[in-house]
Length: 470
Image (cartoon, rainbow, N blue to C red; front, side, top):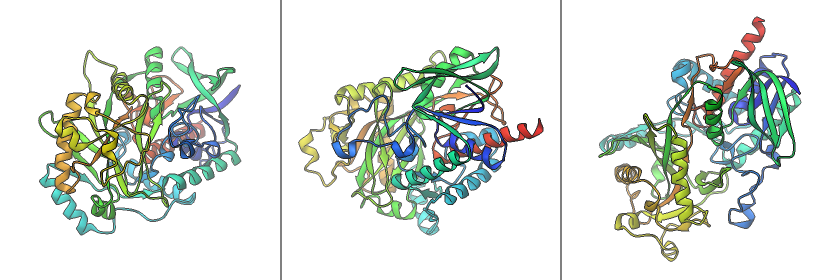
């Protein structure tokens, strides 16, 4: 098979590459390959079974058209201060301008016009003052909340738009390798999800946009084909759940509080991420049966709780060069202790040096929103350095949000973000292999829906510019 532009992965980066190519009227044949299903066929059975059934051959929460992001909280960060390191590559002005461009596209396809976090600047100042007093930095980023269920509608509309404009979509196929002629990428080898069918697709350009789920796979490809890359950051942490009453002011004023600190004694970077007011803690499964925790936030359906991630950044140096594998081992330990599920523990029990028992959870004001989480001891899995960072960060956060460090606050593990492998690229998104481009979270340059979308738009413009110059 042949195509002009082959996009591997149908997450936001791949989607917006195709969207921009259509809007630029390039006239090239575009094929998008996705391991998972079309968005209208993505369904997690847990809504009926109440427990994760570990779907095979892939998890519908993390895999399929629109990627993992649309099935988590569905938030668009509207500041280039948030979402990874892409501004370092393309410049802050271009990054911010493209965020605004992408935001308009999301609005065209049905996003809520309301923006969170901009209506009460005086209250924001008050929260920032408390953060400064606690040794934390507040990043008050405007948020457009799509909502988990509404995001699915938006991306379905985009999916239909792409198909109606000639984008060929091949669902149920994963990329197993790249086709190379010397230092030129000429296409990719694919295998069906059931392993029964294999095929090669030749292309002038290959755009790899496989998301966080594809980070480890891309790291192996880089090593195999000498694609220039370097170890980046891997995040290890927990998802914290508290009653909405505790987070009431922050939820109302900011919707999502992005706080960063460097707690003693290690002074590693620790940050909050993916806050979900009235949300639900969720489980995601990766290909190697690794279960990790995440959070959902719906527009209509609400719980009594707010959840958010607390992540500790790990940057490894020579001679160690397998940060993703390191994080996976941490996750495997947590899964082992929970018999393949997510671990949950009360914060007070952590401080008291004891595990949490299931019967103790039923006595609290705070009821877990992940019903099949297993009560236990997360400190038996999370490394000491990360655990101390998390505890000290929670104590600091309690000064910003009184009650956050309550004994009944719940900590779920493992929360892992696999961004580690960073592909070396120039400002035109060219890798060391001609004709190969790597976008989105798997590239190590972005984190989240919006910045991955931005990278896709930049890629579409670069391909269009080259096509028009020929």
